[in-house]
Image (tube, rainbow, N blue to C red; front, side, top):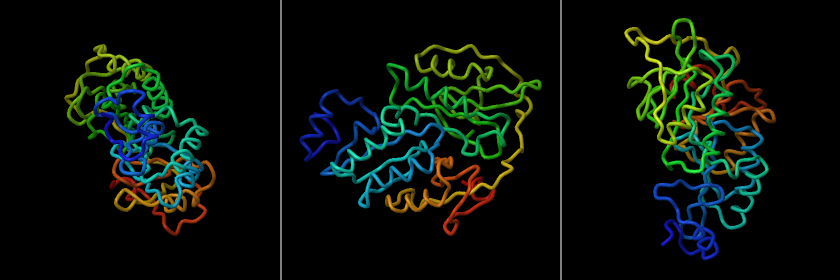
Length: 289
Protein backbone atom coordinates (compact mmCIF):
# COMPACT_ATOMS: atom_id res chain seq x y z
CA UNK A 1 0.00 0.00 0.00
CA UNK A 2 1.30 3.44 -0.92
CA UNK A 3 0.10 6.05 1.61
CA UNK A 4 -1.27 9.45 0.63
CA UNK A 5 -2.28 8.30 -2.85
CA UNK A 6 -5.87 8.21 -4.10
CA UNK A 7 -7.65 8.53 -7.43
CA UNK A 8 -4.54 9.29 -9.47
CA UNK A 9 -3.26 6.01 -10.94
CA UNK A 10 -0.41 7.70 -12.84
CA UNK A 11 0.92 9.23 -9.64
CA UNK A 12 0.40 6.01 -7.72
CA UNK A 13 2.66 4.24 -10.22
CA UNK A 14 5.36 6.89 -9.78
CA UNK A 15 5.26 6.76 -6.00
CA UNK A 16 5.17 2.96 -5.97
CA UNK A 17 8.62 2.84 -7.56
CA UNK A 18 10.12 3.18 -4.10
CA UNK A 19 8.60 2.50 -0.72
CA UNK A 20 7.91 5.73 1.15
CA UNK A 21 9.75 5.99 4.46
CA UNK A 22 7.40 6.24 7.41
CA UNK A 23 7.33 9.84 8.61
CA UNK A 24 8.84 11.18 5.39
CA UNK A 25 7.76 14.59 4.17
CA UNK A 26 6.56 15.39 0.66
CA UNK A 27 9.08 16.63 -1.86
CA UNK A 28 8.86 18.26 -5.27
CA UNK A 29 9.21 14.96 -7.11
CA UNK A 30 7.39 12.78 -4.56
CA UNK A 31 4.30 14.67 -3.47
CA UNK A 32 1.54 13.64 -1.16
CA UNK A 33 -1.64 13.07 -3.12
CA UNK A 34 -5.19 13.24 -1.79
CA UNK A 35 -8.25 12.87 -3.97
CA UNK A 36 -7.19 14.55 -7.21
CA UNK A 37 -4.56 17.08 -6.13
CA UNK A 38 -0.88 17.14 -5.20
CA UNK A 39 0.94 18.61 -2.21
CA UNK A 40 4.66 19.38 -2.59
CA UNK A 41 7.23 20.91 -0.29
CA UNK A 42 10.06 23.25 -1.29
CA UNK A 43 13.05 22.88 1.04
CA UNK A 44 14.65 26.21 1.98
CA UNK A 45 17.99 26.18 3.80
CA UNK A 46 17.66 28.74 6.56
CA UNK A 47 14.26 29.68 5.14
CA UNK A 48 15.92 31.60 2.32
CA UNK A 49 14.42 32.17 -1.12
CA UNK A 50 14.85 34.92 -3.71
CA UNK A 51 11.89 37.11 -4.61
CA UNK A 52 12.26 36.07 -8.26
CA UNK A 53 12.06 32.39 -7.28
CA UNK A 54 8.97 32.95 -5.16
CA UNK A 55 7.29 34.87 -7.97
CA UNK A 56 8.08 32.10 -10.47
CA UNK A 57 6.86 29.34 -8.14
CA UNK A 58 3.61 31.19 -7.47
CA UNK A 59 3.05 31.62 -11.21
CA UNK A 60 3.81 27.95 -11.85
CA UNK A 61 1.44 26.81 -9.10
CA UNK A 62 -1.41 28.71 -10.67
CA UNK A 63 -4.49 30.48 -9.30
CA UNK A 64 -5.99 27.39 -7.68
CA UNK A 65 -2.98 26.61 -5.49
CA UNK A 66 -2.33 27.49 -1.86
CA UNK A 67 1.18 28.18 -0.56
CA UNK A 68 1.86 27.84 3.14
CA UNK A 69 4.71 28.23 5.61
CA UNK A 70 5.75 25.04 7.43
CA UNK A 71 7.06 24.62 10.96
CA UNK A 72 10.60 24.28 9.58
CA UNK A 73 10.35 27.50 7.57
CA UNK A 74 9.89 25.76 4.23
CA UNK A 75 7.15 26.35 1.67
CA UNK A 76 4.40 23.86 0.98
CA UNK A 77 2.21 24.10 -2.13
CA UNK A 78 -1.24 22.55 -2.01
CA UNK A 79 -4.04 21.87 -4.48
CA UNK A 80 -1.89 21.29 -7.56
CA UNK A 81 -3.41 19.45 -10.50
CA UNK A 82 -1.32 17.39 -12.96
CA UNK A 83 -0.35 20.34 -15.14
CA UNK A 84 0.46 22.62 -12.21
CA UNK A 85 2.62 19.95 -10.58
CA UNK A 86 4.64 19.55 -13.77
CA UNK A 87 5.11 23.33 -13.96
CA UNK A 88 6.28 23.44 -10.33
CA UNK A 89 8.77 20.63 -11.02
CA UNK A 90 10.16 22.53 -14.04
CA UNK A 91 10.38 25.73 -11.99
CA UNK A 92 12.09 24.01 -9.06
CA UNK A 93 14.57 22.39 -11.45
CA UNK A 94 15.39 25.75 -13.00
CA UNK A 95 16.29 27.14 -9.57
CA UNK A 96 18.10 24.01 -8.39
CA UNK A 97 15.47 23.15 -5.78
CA UNK A 98 13.95 19.97 -7.20
CA UNK A 99 16.36 17.53 -5.54
CA UNK A 100 17.59 19.32 -2.43
CA UNK A 101 14.58 19.02 -0.14
CA UNK A 102 16.93 18.02 2.71
CA UNK A 103 18.28 21.56 2.66
CA UNK A 104 15.01 22.49 4.31
CA UNK A 105 16.08 20.59 7.43
CA UNK A 106 18.28 23.57 8.38
CA UNK A 107 16.55 26.27 10.45
CA UNK A 108 18.34 29.56 11.16
CA UNK A 109 17.53 32.86 12.77
CA UNK A 110 15.76 34.95 10.11
CA UNK A 111 18.02 38.03 10.15
CA UNK A 112 21.40 36.32 9.90
CA UNK A 113 23.93 38.08 7.76
CA UNK A 114 26.97 40.35 7.91
CA UNK A 115 25.12 43.08 9.84
CA UNK A 116 23.68 41.02 12.70
CA UNK A 117 24.72 38.50 15.32
CA UNK A 118 28.14 37.37 16.42
CA UNK A 119 29.04 36.18 12.93
CA UNK A 120 27.54 35.81 9.48
CA UNK A 121 26.36 32.20 9.34
CA UNK A 122 25.43 32.28 5.64
CA UNK A 123 28.32 30.01 4.61
CA UNK A 124 27.69 27.65 7.54
CA UNK A 125 24.00 27.28 6.65
CA UNK A 126 24.93 26.52 3.02
CA UNK A 127 27.67 24.03 3.99
CA UNK A 128 25.48 22.15 6.47
CA UNK A 129 22.59 22.00 3.99
CA UNK A 130 24.91 20.65 1.29
CA UNK A 131 26.17 17.92 3.62
CA UNK A 132 22.63 16.83 4.47
CA UNK A 133 21.71 16.68 0.79
CA UNK A 134 24.79 14.55 0.08
CA UNK A 135 24.18 11.97 2.83
CA UNK A 136 22.93 8.65 1.48
CA UNK A 137 20.79 7.78 4.49
CA UNK A 138 19.17 10.36 6.73
CA UNK A 139 16.34 10.01 9.19
CA UNK A 140 13.23 11.77 7.83
CA UNK A 141 12.94 13.79 11.03
CA UNK A 142 16.61 14.78 11.40
CA UNK A 143 16.84 18.55 11.72
CA UNK A 144 19.41 21.24 12.45
CA UNK A 145 19.12 24.63 14.11
CA UNK A 146 21.83 27.27 13.56
CA UNK A 147 21.73 30.53 15.52
CA UNK A 148 24.02 33.47 14.81
CA UNK A 149 23.87 34.88 18.34
CA UNK A 150 21.75 37.89 17.45
CA UNK A 151 18.68 39.33 19.19
CA UNK A 152 16.20 37.62 16.82
CA UNK A 153 17.04 34.05 17.70
CA UNK A 154 15.96 30.43 17.35
CA UNK A 155 17.61 29.23 20.55
CA UNK A 156 14.30 27.86 21.81
CA UNK A 157 13.88 25.50 18.84
CA UNK A 158 14.45 21.80 19.56
CA UNK A 159 16.39 19.86 16.94
CA UNK A 160 18.51 16.77 16.42
CA UNK A 161 21.46 19.12 16.72
CA UNK A 162 21.42 22.82 17.51
CA UNK A 163 24.39 25.11 16.96
CA UNK A 164 24.46 28.54 18.59
CA UNK A 165 27.15 31.18 18.19
CA UNK A 166 28.62 32.25 21.52
CA UNK A 167 31.65 34.20 22.65
CA UNK A 168 34.06 32.05 24.67
CA UNK A 169 37.29 33.68 25.84
CA UNK A 170 37.07 36.26 23.04
CA UNK A 171 36.56 33.54 20.40
CA UNK A 172 33.31 33.01 18.55
CA UNK A 173 32.38 29.31 18.68
CA UNK A 174 29.25 27.20 18.29
CA UNK A 175 27.76 25.70 21.41
CA UNK A 176 26.12 22.37 20.67
CA UNK A 177 22.85 20.95 21.97
CA UNK A 178 21.88 17.41 21.02
CA UNK A 179 18.22 16.44 20.83
CA UNK A 180 17.11 19.61 22.57
CA UNK A 181 17.17 23.38 22.24
CA UNK A 182 20.10 25.67 22.98
CA UNK A 183 18.06 27.23 25.77
CA UNK A 184 17.77 23.80 27.39
CA UNK A 185 21.53 23.67 27.75
CA UNK A 186 24.49 22.79 25.55
CA UNK A 187 26.91 19.88 25.83
CA UNK A 188 29.97 21.88 24.82
CA UNK A 189 31.38 23.91 21.95
CA UNK A 190 33.04 23.40 18.58
CA UNK A 191 34.95 25.67 16.25
CA UNK A 192 32.89 27.40 13.57
CA UNK A 193 34.82 25.50 10.90
CA UNK A 194 33.74 22.16 12.40
CA UNK A 195 30.00 22.77 11.99
CA UNK A 196 29.32 20.76 8.82
CA UNK A 197 31.48 17.81 9.90
CA UNK A 198 29.85 17.73 13.33
CA UNK A 199 26.34 17.73 11.85
CA UNK A 200 27.27 14.93 9.44
CA UNK A 201 28.75 12.89 12.31
CA UNK A 202 25.59 13.24 14.38
CA UNK A 203 23.47 12.29 11.37
CA UNK A 204 25.54 9.11 11.03
CA UNK A 205 25.28 8.32 14.74
CA UNK A 206 28.84 9.29 15.66
CA UNK A 207 29.30 11.24 18.90
CA UNK A 208 31.26 14.45 18.24
CA UNK A 209 34.15 15.69 20.33
CA UNK A 210 33.04 18.79 22.19
CA UNK A 211 35.06 21.31 24.16
CA UNK A 212 33.50 21.91 27.56
CA UNK A 213 33.15 25.45 28.84
CA UNK A 214 31.90 27.26 31.91
CA UNK A 215 28.21 28.03 31.69
CA UNK A 216 28.22 29.70 35.10
CA UNK A 217 27.69 33.00 33.34
CA UNK A 218 25.42 33.62 30.36
CA UNK A 219 27.12 33.08 26.99
CA UNK A 220 28.24 36.20 25.20
CA UNK A 221 25.54 37.40 22.84
CA UNK A 222 25.47 40.57 20.82
CA UNK A 223 22.87 43.29 20.58
CA UNK A 224 23.99 44.26 17.09
CA UNK A 225 21.01 44.50 14.76
CA UNK A 226 20.72 45.07 11.05
CA UNK A 227 21.74 48.58 10.02
CA UNK A 228 19.36 48.52 7.05
CA UNK A 229 15.54 48.43 7.11
CA UNK A 230 13.91 45.09 7.90
CA UNK A 231 10.69 44.63 5.98
CA UNK A 232 8.28 41.77 5.79
CA UNK A 233 4.71 40.65 6.07
CA UNK A 234 2.57 38.32 8.11
CA UNK A 235 1.08 35.40 6.22
CA UNK A 236 -2.51 35.21 7.46
CA UNK A 237 -3.16 31.72 8.84
CA UNK A 238 0.26 30.77 7.44
CA UNK A 239 -1.42 29.91 4.14
CA UNK A 240 -2.48 32.09 1.20
CA UNK A 241 -3.37 31.66 -2.49
CA UNK A 242 -0.50 31.66 -4.96
CA UNK A 243 -1.64 35.04 -6.29
CA UNK A 244 -1.12 36.57 -2.83
CA UNK A 245 2.46 35.30 -2.78
CA UNK A 246 3.05 36.59 -6.30
CA UNK A 247 1.89 40.06 -5.27
CA UNK A 248 4.15 39.94 -2.21
CA UNK A 249 7.21 38.81 -4.18
CA UNK A 250 6.65 41.44 -6.86
CA UNK A 251 6.78 44.21 -4.25
CA UNK A 252 10.55 43.66 -3.96
CA UNK A 253 13.37 44.31 -6.39
CA UNK A 254 14.42 41.30 -8.45
CA UNK A 255 16.44 38.69 -6.55
CA UNK A 256 15.85 40.23 -3.13
CA UNK A 257 16.71 37.71 -0.40
CA UNK A 258 13.59 36.72 1.53
CA UNK A 259 13.53 34.56 4.64
CA UNK A 260 10.56 32.44 5.64
CA UNK A 261 10.31 32.19 9.43
CA UNK A 262 9.09 29.28 11.51
CA UNK A 263 6.18 31.27 12.92
CA UNK A 264 4.61 32.69 9.80
CA UNK A 265 6.08 36.05 8.74
CA UNK A 266 8.34 36.36 5.73
CA UNK A 267 11.07 38.98 6.13
CA UNK A 268 13.67 40.61 3.91
CA UNK A 269 16.73 41.48 6.01
CA UNK A 270 17.95 44.04 3.47
CA UNK A 271 15.46 44.95 0.80
CA UNK A 272 14.54 47.45 -1.85
CA UNK A 273 10.77 47.68 -1.80
CA UNK A 274 8.90 48.80 -4.89
CA UNK A 275 5.40 48.72 -3.36
CA UNK A 276 5.13 48.74 0.44
CA UNK A 277 1.38 49.10 0.96
CA UNK A 278 1.11 45.60 2.44
CA UNK A 279 4.50 45.42 4.16
CA UNK A 280 5.60 46.24 7.67
CA UNK A 281 9.05 47.29 8.73
CA UNK A 282 11.13 47.60 11.86
CA UNK A 283 12.36 45.53 14.80
CA UNK A 284 8.90 44.82 16.27
CA UNK A 285 7.76 43.20 13.07
CA UNK A 286 10.53 40.64 13.05
CA UNK A 287 11.45 40.23 16.71
CA UNK A 288 8.00 39.53 18.09
CA UNK A 289 7.58 36.58 15.79
